[in-house]
Length: 413
Ligand SMILES: [Zn+2]
Ligand SMILES: [Zn+2]
View 1: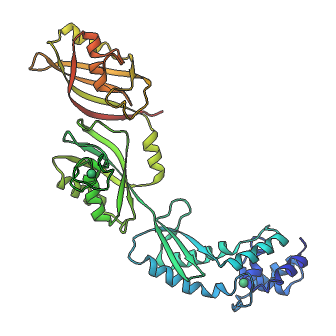
View 2: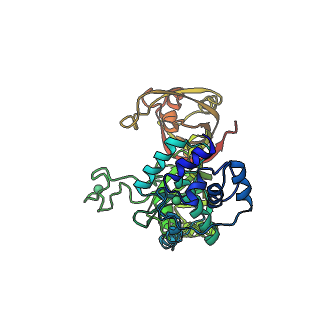
View 3: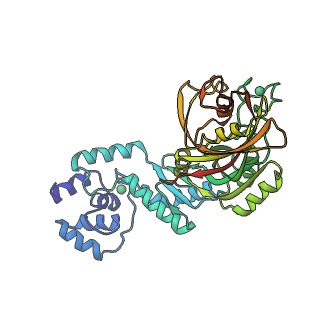
């Protein structure tokens, strides 16, 4: 569209300098209101560019303007409202958004249908940019378009600000030193978490979980409302988790404080639950890493204490060690069949070492296997659903008395 024609179409909306200049935003390098003042006096884009480059910022009013209704002079008011709404919240990044009165948005649409959107900056974009810049200048907080700590939305119709506090993600590794501790909180199966007699009104199926222990300290420290626990896989409730510990990310809902002393937090958790869990390597994380932690593959190293119906011979233990390098076929274990689909998984046993113990009918073994191998079933055979198995190879009933995860080995591809 020709310059004069475009200018005429915009001025039909009694455009102020801001709104006039915004329609030429990426055509001339200057603040919108300067571009607008220059365009108003010019007959060509060339002339306007020259004027804008040496121009001085015009005084603003714009109450007559049908595109902004004088909204730009209300920006300082919006900034005060935003500062009130975010006071007391710790954050370092934010994303600015705004709601513009519907009548103004309709006028902008009408204008765009006439002049197109080439080189244009929309009113929302300009307002967000101006407010964002000012907030950064006054508070030192940075704009972040991907994963901000806060989403700030200012509503110009009501002159009110809404602040959405985004979750805080904390990465760490946990060791579980006590058996019988599930990894994540679980709603009571009788009341589905509402609270009943069975669960003593806690709504919890288990009194304590790794998540509960970690979260109790983290929530007190951050002022958050709730947590989600993202583990790098999980061990059975009655298995310990030893070695370097299992990676996890704790997602904290609506934190008030984010400026955390990680070493101090780690120590607070470890001091409080010294017999039960041990946490290492706490650091800030993000939602992108949750996806990574859920999808990377890993081998696991286990220690199992196996009880046999009669003492196994040396030859039998040697035969078991022969499983190293073999693939085993496992149908879904009968103990989880009620909640998981029945299918066959093939998993590789990487290494296996057996040692006798003082009790002749018990032996200890260290097994490294691919992620998702069911170790208890490898031992018992699970009524022939896992092949081969310890029971199948020895021809004796075998039982897993104790199971510990000794290490989690990430596989670098
Ligand atoms: Zn305007
Ligand atoms: Zn209950």
